[in-house]
Image (cartoon, rainbow, N blue to C red; front, side, top):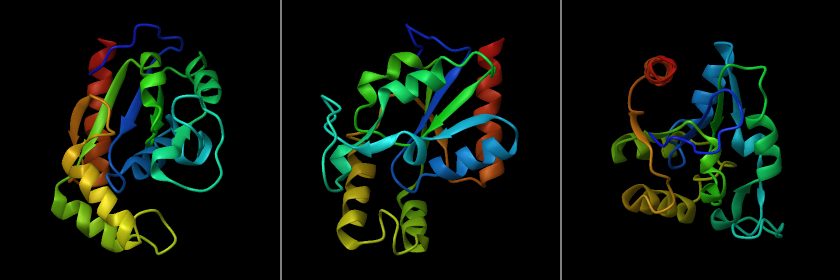
Length: 172
């Protein structure tokens, strides 16, 4: 796990992985269990230059970035004992220092393909070219940060239990 050097909140964790690895499902389950989990793709993401943050027109995987000011505001929140940030961002190098740890959801190619097949037609990964990109990124891991690998091939409740047990160990 990566330990943050400039941590500002009580405890902050990033949950990352390729598309269809379960980041959104994990965030929803954590919310249902009473934890603060930020859906990065819904709350923090926009299309922009990963280096400058300048907004850009259109939609492109390489320009899917998070608003660092919004992220910092959540990370500085002292009211919650732990906050989870779930999702992918191409500018993660600019904010990794805000996290106490990074979890990388690791899925097999078989599981990934099954989940892509089940994806609604209007979501990223449903089109053939998006699917090819996701499979290439799964193989190369070129835009995934270093972190603690978590087996995301298991049922959602077991996946979240595993993450929470590892976070609990950080508190001891």
